[in-house]
Length: 435
Ligand code: URA
Image (cartoon, rainbow, N blue to C red):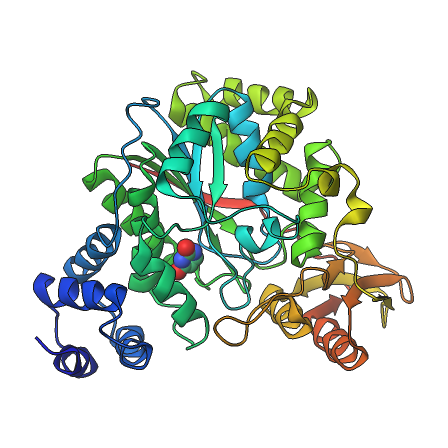
């Protein structure tokens, strides 16, 4: 079999066989198909799509590109959660320790930023020393010892996704249904959790722009998970404006820590509590959604979720002083509050544009392997529906270069749209899909 024939078949709209997909994934993982051929193949998939069968075969080939963890000897029900990608989405940083503090083991392999959307691993790496490359043995040992792991993809688990993810990020091939489904579900299946919570984002700051697309993505992932014998719940959530206020790695980590101390933005806190409640329900820790919501709220209020977070940071080698004393986190040299150009109701806040502004500030990658500046970002001060007064701070830019700061200011300002008449607030969630 030749890579070039498989690329040509997909380019011409053909349906790939299981053997062809397995060959491509194995050879790419082992390094015998180079990035340039894989980039062409990804673009052909992006442009021509994949059938349900191809998407299933791709997911399984990627999941089996490394080991599949079996966690049953550690716990009968470990849970995992994954977001399809958004702007200001730091939900895992709060929800994972919250669930683990309720004695439900959380085994999570998580990703880096992708396009305009941030990644939990990049956020955690704002903490000096925090290791995101745990081996399979270390993953299992830590899960057994403290009941929580938040790590990047290891060399052993779904290595195909680790390579493809980085390549997609810089070849404009992120927003593709089969590529997103296979990326997320291969990691989740390899990670071994029995319960999988999917936060499927929709809107300007998500890869799925319409409810119909998000619905197709959620249904496909729930179905794939169920076929593999996992319990899966998907919630479709709004990502038409950033979640919370902070966008940018260290700024988001700070906001998550504030939320673990019961502060933080109301929309973000509520979002975390609802996702956590679904996970508690899925694990059998609560008998109905109301009991699950109460347990999630009590666990946050008691400080147990915060204590579990510090335990996690220490276990993965992070310097815990950076989350105990937030002023130690990377700080940008230039901080500029930008005044509102007019009064009015905030009608739209284009989340992707805010995410792109943060990438340009250095908070995301434009080329494979780019280093991230953890200190930069944007804090928005209003949510859609809020009444804004002219000349009050509309958002604040955190930058290290003046030219970049000015470009970001212009871009984020243009992302805000105003109305003279009142505007409805956006809902947090739209739909629930369960296996
Ligand atoms: N999250 C992932 O892990 N992969 C994607 O492709 C998109 C979001």
